[in-house]
Image (tube, rainbow, N blue to C red):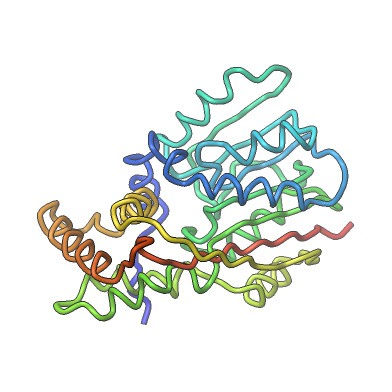
Length: 270
């Protein structure tokens, strides 16, 4: 059963609340984006579309290392785009267009981009196949589509902790996992359906420890919209119970958790 019922607008509103602290709390996302940029086929990519661009760290990496001089950034959060805009102010010789928009309806022309990238946003897209199909539409023949997302197995320890809680946490908190995560086989199938030719699809798994407080701060930064249908008091009550459960499961090193990064690189035929 799919208990995740949030659309692109509600997801964007959630990220509006945490845009100012996102880069600090999600340092590992930037590192993953760097690995995706480095894994692209050799060559320059003058014109890119960044889907779910957030604060712009992937686009900035493309500018620094891949010859990008024109960026179209699309994100559901105006707050995240404000951060991107401020970080792009020091760029010279680079044109940056930023749009509040939906990954399934990109404000970009057909076949106009040398590469379309999406880093650590794809898992939140409500219609993932539609998003991939749009990316295939706006990249030129011979161009590259590259995606980095959270893969299946991410935060499995959190999921098992929540499933053991009594009374249970909100259904959206546990139901979201199946909705957002994909594995390499599923990603390759979506690329095939969109008419793209996979170049490489792979995943990396990291196991880390952190304090329950730091772990919950990361969750709030990326998944605060999952509590948008609750009153602040209700959300706080569930959050306090979860904090206690994570603390009980923590050891001397803190709370141990898995994070799976799913990478995909594909080419548009032509």
